[in-house]
Image 1: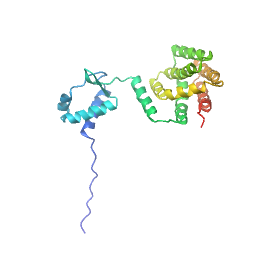
Image 2: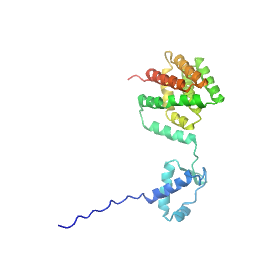
Image 3: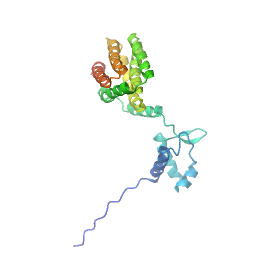
Image 4: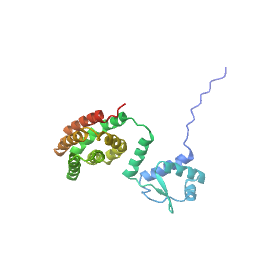
Length: 235
């Protein structure tokens, strides 16, 4: 009986175009290629990497799709601006592409994020941040028309995220802001929703002003839970 031969599993290597894309991305992340820096021509990149122009073309198409580089008329390929707006738009696009996103899923995200945001806002906010929150709370208390009230409500929570001094919270919150605005606009058209929202915002803000992080987290947690009950669309 012949001996059994055991072969080692062959490691799968990434495509050449993916290797090129990874190399360019690493240069960008290390800031050797700053935002809006013009990339070399397709021919130059092919010579530098020692690959065909087809490989370079595939790599650039992948980087454009990922938002790492962009094609500008008259300039060619440049490193995309690394801004919060670009990230927010990308995340919002993902959310919108999900189609009918159940409000329960949106609530799960709020319940995880917003109490933590409120606690950090109480610890870190500047006086300017408090002034912005106060202005929004006061305007909501003036009983504006429903569409305006919905916008103020969303802006209050966005201002709370800014008050954490961590822009990532605002990026994540903005990814679901379109859904929240739509739901709020419907809910604020009837009942005492505006008055309720104003009272809840005031309670949270009072704790932020006094730097009571635990109290701010608890108040926001109660608000998100009650909002879920009030805002949940009927089945």
